[in-house]
Length: 398
Image (cartoon, rainbow, N blue to C red; front, side, top):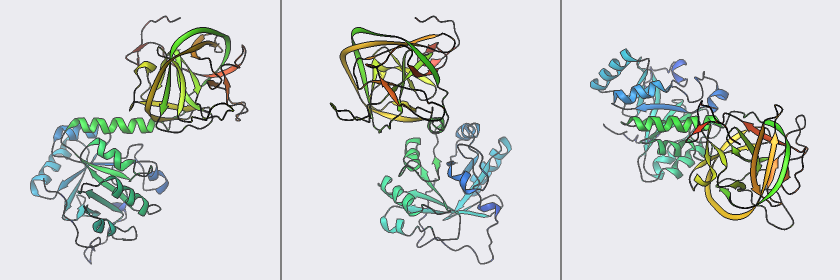
């Protein structure tokens, strides 16, 4: 399949008698979070995905996952494919000819740029007003820095900027460039697996916008129990006061263990670290799953949760397992159900406290100061698990 042609200069002017219909200038694609109307505030919260493929199986997989906009060359055989697919599924076919992208009604929607040099990158300017949408093919060896330069140059612009990606991992680079990312991607693939991987990535992204329900629990037992192999989880992200990981001896009740971000007299703050507990404990990971602390390793993701229940994903940078003195903490919920956790017996290890009303009067309590009747936060969920996935079955844990 032919790749994009590079415009010789700035975005070419449309024909003199051509007027882009207002409707054609709206985002004409499926979005990740929702099907957004042409409203800038809502558009900011979503990422566009167009799919460029000749595979009917890839098309089917994409449509089943909510992505219905497909990009084709304008040659007759591709128009025949688009017509065939339109009879199978409700899709929005777009066609490119040279540097221009049109819809089925031959309305100009976007311009394509092939960027392989700094000079070509500089020709892309947000004040060019010929089209609301720009598609960029970064055909050179460099992708990350050029994408970041585009994000910086187009910030505050009303233009929609997409990048051509040949894999889900490449798409992630463009979506996360300078944190804000480009507005979306054109996923040019012939394998279903790449569709599945990209959808899984977006689901993990959208998961962090959900608010987790946390439960107030009352401490019923605090007891030193001897030595054990405990796990420190060092993340590739910094944590703020009130944030930590969900950890527990039972998946049905996970304690919110505070990070080591707080200052102390005897040891420097380590805002990237959670002293999480012994190797057998469960920890919450993306997708509503759990895994054992002993299974974590560099590159895996965990869920970071704050005092109000807001969550985000973070990448594990390192795991440290060392033999340390442990303390057993048990707590009960309002229904008198008992949950437990083991933690290192140290002043830098703490459990996060509930809010009082809407205010955080206290962030955490060190386990060395924890007493019966103190209140901490729990995440309650299904206890039966198979490879970390919640299942419905009879189970007794104690």
